[in-house]
Amino acid sequence: MTEYAATDYSENVMSLFVDEVTIDMKAGDGGNGAVAFRKEKFVPRGGPAGGDGGKGGDVVLCADSNLSTLLDFRYQRIYKAPRGVDGSAKQMYGKNAEDLLLRVPLGTIATDVESGRIIADLTKHDQREVVATGGMGGRGNAHFASSTHQAPQYAENGEPGELRTVKLELKLLADVGIIGFPNVGKSSIIAAISAARPKIANYPFTTLIPNLGVVQVDKDPNRTFVMADIPGLIEGASDGIGLGHQFLRHIERTRLLAHVIDVSDAVGRDPLEDFRIVNQELERYSAKLAGLTQIVVLNKIDIADPEKVESTRRSLAEFRTVVQVSAATQQGLKELVYLLANTLDELPRQPDVFAEGDDDGPVLINLTNNPGGYSYRTRQMSRRWEARFDEESGAFVVAGKGIERVVAMTPLLNEHAVARLQRVLEKAGIVSKLRSLGAKEGDTVRIGTAEFDFFDEDIDE
Image (cartoon, rainbow, N blue to C red; front, top):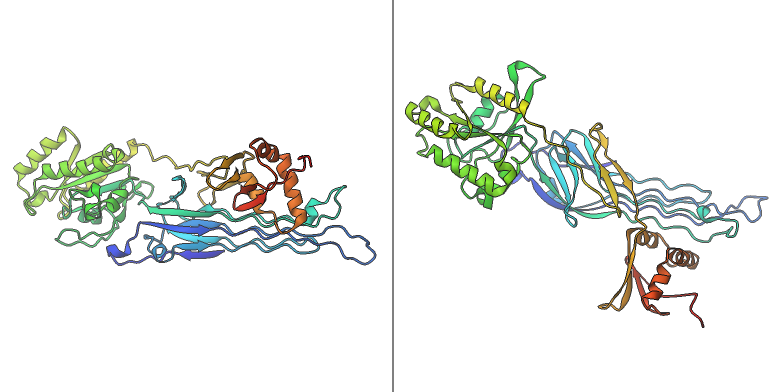
């Protein structure tokens, strides 16, 4: 299996933190089936013996907990999986191609740009999702032998692999998101109650990328939760000001928000106004974010005016649960951890995301009991099709995933294969439908990327 891994950079620099990128991916085509016949001594008129082609490689996303950025995908935007090996004589099957494995950080969501559907949501280490399916190998001529057609002179081409444009979007996986204005002490709090070691300094925007920390309650390894230190929000963040969209995106997966407010006079801000502005930005960005349970954390009480702390607490207590702490002296931090843990216990966990398929393509089923390995996919090709006359091009157009697949796998330079395709079209009712639409001998018919001259054996000479 061929692998590409996004390099994990440790520098805390925003230019290295990439959390959204669009890439093109092409799964491998299937190998062609072979046209061959037995040529053994003392075996006259040996039958067909062409082998099948191998399957093309899939493009697979693999979640890696050691990665934290999609940076490498910014420098390479096109990924192609190898094609399957062609079949050969003596019914020898071609080798299946290796899959192309793309490693991405935990929390990566893959969305098909054309349809807007989520096709993969990677939330567990080593979880793998097929996002572009390789083509099936074409069948050799041995498959087409029958009592009335004992020496078929044709085989199938390999099926084309899926071609997709996919948007990769990174949303951090955390139970608690710490939000608030810059320089209110969010990084200091997460450093004090978890094993995270974020860069801390006394100036705004010290934190340029989200930091994750695991909090253990009473040193119990079975009772932990993950906190995300989201970089400071400012007024206008919902409009993208100050990289607001990149920051707000990472709050969407959290179940609980800890809203940190500086109640000291160190920055000369109004705590109630800060509370209003941040919640306004949450509401403008997403109603879901605004509806999350939120605990207000009044920080820096060790250097704050007690009367100011109390008046702020009273003003906010009617809307939210309020806790008072000092990250510097660790006052109130133990109570904060208990409050967060107990609140999380009462909140439902985020449901698993399922990417819904349709009748015309691969269907993705996310198996929650099987976090490792591939999600189960089935290739259900619809037999539905439609035919119409395109006035702009003057051609009759037949559209349908199933029939387009048959045409793509037909070697159109082989007259025997084209004759078989004609029989398939007649059996499917396509020829009679085109006839009812007014198609006449010599008219152009387009199926997928192929064009034909209409031929109707039933037309009277």
